[in-house]
Length: 232
Image (cartoon, rainbow, N blue to C red; front, side, top):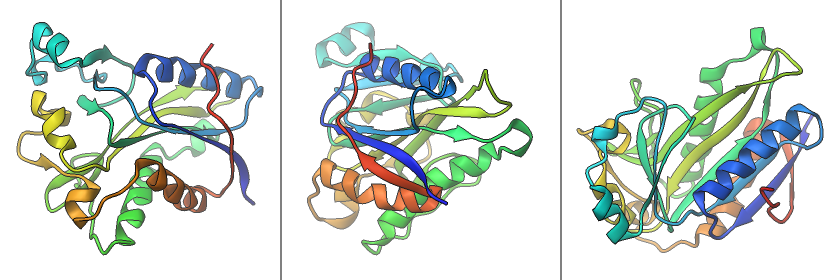
């Protein structure tokens, strides 16, 4: 049976606002004051460093970050450093994951990857996983990064998810922001985008709309679109 899912898209949201909104939704979902959510958006140029904490994978100095208008956050998701910016579709699922003894945390990550893999297959793109890494790859280039946090529920023995995936859509995004970092700490592989893989142009908002049907099918949700809510 499909569960209800609130889906919101906003063209551009500051990273800190989105982070605060996620924490608000996690708390309210745990207190049964909210439904499960999928937030879809784009961020201004931003680097985030996950819980692996490898600041040496940031190649820009504080002065260079300021000159380029890129903000930096050390955050509570898993993983290493990554880039967010215009031309990239970011998805933050705020979902319940059952009871602790029945939760397959790795299975959740594989499902997120499968959403992107199935979407890319619509364009004849054979995407893949790499056993030692999380994310989605095309010809040894990462097209989608995934980093999540499993928030332990105060009411159940399960978890509530936050953070999520970053799907590169527009051509050139790998040169605009990824050149200032070692993405996810992986030196041997590059970064690509949907436009680079297809030779076509895409609207990030249209991709968001199309991705929702795959997400809803794989996770057994019935989506309902709503305007993005305030983080306060």
